[in-house]
Image 1 (tube, rainbow, N blue to C red):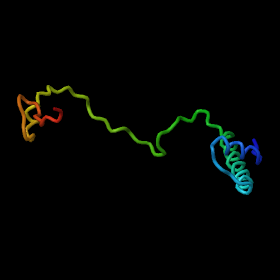
Image 2: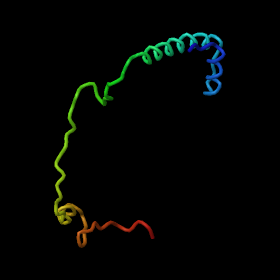
Image 3: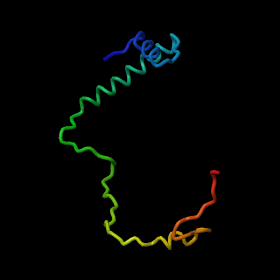
Image 4: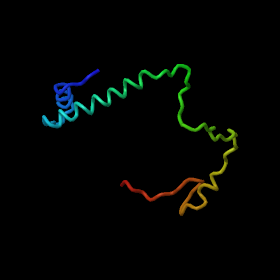
Length: 95
């Protein structure tokens, strides 16, 4: 695929970007180079290649999912300035 100056100006207009004639000529070459590289990437055979999330293999750090009894309300509100029946007490802000 090749991009000409008119295509560059049309894309710039659609993107609401002001492009001068000199910039359009320069961008034509740059976009053609980018599209040429993309065409090269499309020619690479990736059949049988598993997608990766990282270039180095790694295992996810996992912890065992253990059910606990909870019942830690007293510990949670221990440092609160004011509590009542294991609830935080805050000043009234709406009158």
